[in-house]
Image (tube, rainbow, N blue to C red; front, side, top):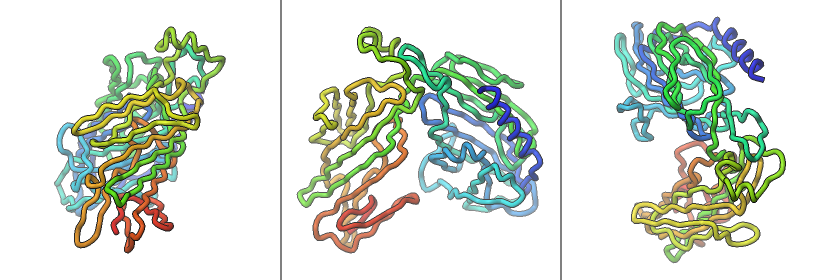
Length: 401
């Protein structure tokens, strides 16, 4: 299996080397940091862009192999603010899919629109933040209760770009120092749980050097195949939130019999790949919290509250091994005045959209907002594309009436 995978990457390398470069932009320095400490892969790239041509450039292109682009959950670009941090603020640039001519069909391109054209000899530094889901591959695909979980990660030691790169480096942060194997190339170093590649100099456009890392990762691979969030607005100053989860452990599949006795005696040795609890970060001043499934209330939960945050620690009725599923419901109430404001005779609801549980990947998310009887002139605004539907008095988040 490893050999076939490496061969596919090699063929991919050969297929893109013929492509021409775009414009006169040059990446004088690229620093990439890959975080593999959870099932969600986070890649931060700091790139310094220089215009060596005479024409003003208003966009920068980013290239992704299709197998990566298919798992891209979030992509943001902003001016570098130091230490490689990308902040979702007004300084973020517009990013959209484009289809440049004479480029390989096996690549997906995104355009970063610059607020001000980049003239001859000018440069700027961008932070690119990409988040991927379902990227880590369990290998082996099936493990026994007492075995640890090992996963594979594929990338390129070279920064894949339609522009020439003068200097670039890559660091990969792993959850543990136990590494089964990793691709060794020129200038490869390992320090504990971190692998460093580079620096590499004078890379041609669309340079690609495949690498594979095989490492231990017993982090929760919790995936909500469907999450339905219902937010009901009351006339009496209350917001009732109900969340229905259909959860699965999407890591290496469990094989053989499960021994509760072995698990209770040595949970970290006889159940290292399983997860037993999840933490939901709820708004402050939450009350009337409950956690139940089809059987009834689940007592294995803890709630910590404060003036700035509330954390709900939940534990399923049984430890979650690879391939195991569970369904449960979380409910809680919040003061309406914390999320509703009035402007120009209209009421605006401002509420978080996604899942409050840490490190959970959501395949399908449905958000329903139930407005009070008599609401009219209703409109909705979301900061990202989403399918919306209005039926009776049920509307998407970001609505006003």
